[in-house]
Length: 101
Image 1 (cartoon, rainbow, N blue to C red):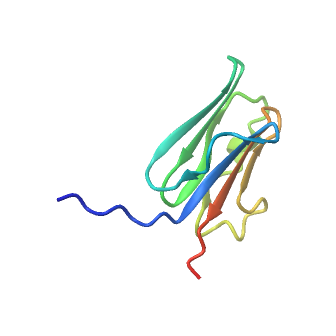
Image 2: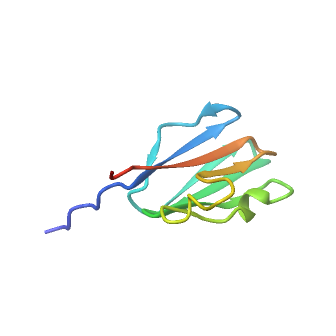
């Protein structure tokens, strides 16, 4: 018998040039989301049950990749809190924790 899935502790909302890109993504398993804007603008977002990060980007400055990992434990102490932003490609990633309180 398969184990019951763990409770979802957060969602990831991706915004592309100011518009939401698809539905909020549950942080329920390890996955890679690829956002393509033609051949020259590609962002890969790595989502796990506990974290989200910009895995790679075709932007020139790579600041979004350098912003590091957002976790359910560290988001309150990060400069950008629950966000990762790729300004050159117009991609914004937001981790939305589910409050258990």
